[in-house]
Image (cartoon, rainbow, N blue to C red; front, side, top):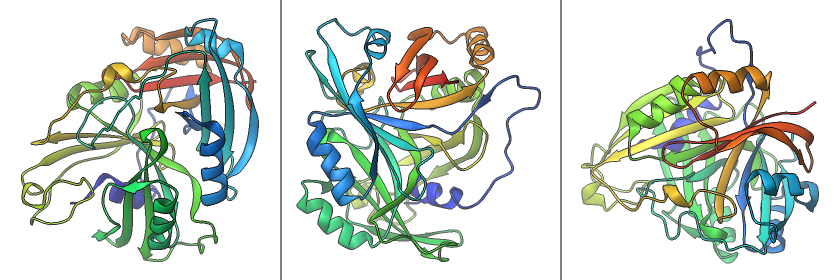
Length: 343
């Protein structure tokens, strides 16, 4: 199957011509970070620093203003660590948060790729994917498939979807041909988080929310399906891989191939809906955060478009970011997205 990650790989090196509409009074940058809610902060930090070789750029207690914005009870506390790729640390970071003093369910407990709701994964480039796969399994992660080699246009890649602590899923991509412009570093995972995927039940509704109401810019829209029965990154039985058709939409704030999101809706494979679970402090991929220039103008725009924030516009303090103004929205299928402006 020509999968979502193949398209990520293609678009992260090819600049497309999509642009934000002219005359906007605001500017949304690629997401600065993706937030994971985890059960054991120390264990999870060790994995990303010792195995994936990412660096800690912030560590501390989550500010009370954030917990209040999320309407968590007074008993709730949280500790956090922010990690960044050493070769591109300025955006696409990962913030790990451990909540205490409040019940935490899993966002996608035992979720399969065809189960809908919330945010499904993050995507990272990697080197030496087979050795990485062995190492990940030794640390308690398990593959949703073995590494799969395939071609997408002029590109040939290895791809791996793997699940670990807190039911978190990462898609790893290793380029085969043509070579990357610069040789990859020696670390397993390099670069920042390039994409985050959502599995949706109502494709048209989700597309309308992100493109028409939030003003994101489409990069690619296509339909994918295996032409012959066989292995596929979606872990479908071989005989069903030709019967499941998927609609795919890839988009970003400015139409460029960074800070992307992707929608995938599958016709012929249905499962559980986890939309109601995708709220703080539940465990899993919790949210994406986008910096905005002129947040007031953007907030006014989405209100006029009929979007009602789940967190109203307010001041907060984020570790590693500082004082900021922010608001949050949820997609029709539960994905939590925060927009902020910092001095």
